[in-house]
Amino acid sequence: MFHTSEQKTAILVFAHSAKEEIRRKGISKGLDLFSELNARILAEVKKTELPYFHLSEELQTGQTFGQRFANAIALVFANGFERVIAIGNDSPQLKSRHLLVAEDCLNQGKSVVGPSLDGGFYLLGLKKEHFDKAIFTQFSWQKTSLLREITSYLNQLGVFTEKLNYLIDIDSAHDIKLLLKTTFVSIHYKLRGLLASVLSPIRIDAQQLCNLLRPNHCRLCDLVRGSP
Image 1 (cartoon, one colour):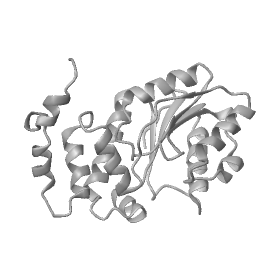
Image 2: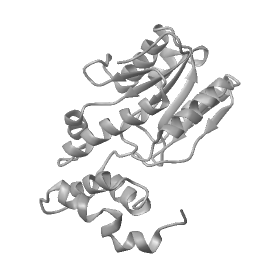
Image 3: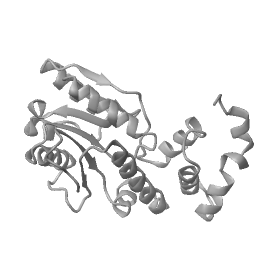
């Protein structure tokens, strides 16, 4: 956990440890993948130079997902921050630029969501005055109606909500297949290798697969490479 009182916007990384992720999501060969995703998202957060809180399952409190998430947001506000950008660790396409755009939206008085393809979100930015802990606890967390419920709530408050681009988050092996199919070239070769190794029916060294998927070892990359 890192924070400073000089800023009014903080990032909340609400993310389980790698071991807990594979237990909850049933991705049996995903330990290296989720370890890399945790390290990667923290690196992107640090690039923004914004204060941040990292809450894994050991620091989360509450019986349900909604309670734990609402308590985590409340913790950020209790530490003197007026705006929060909440993210997880399971959207490999999420970059520091998305976080900085979200910060800019909040500075303009807007709320901001980064929608995911499953009806949820990979990013939520809101001001303290728009946060009601009791209501947030009752949203249909981890359901396809979640994004609709949150945007409806914010609309009722008269808050304009900016929508970022849709991204894919990883909740199952199906999501990994979709991610590799749609964003093969844009994902770093090391992460591509880890994603592919989870789906591989045979055991293969992750670094070996990473090397095979490097752009200069992949003819597909030569075929689809865009302009510089």
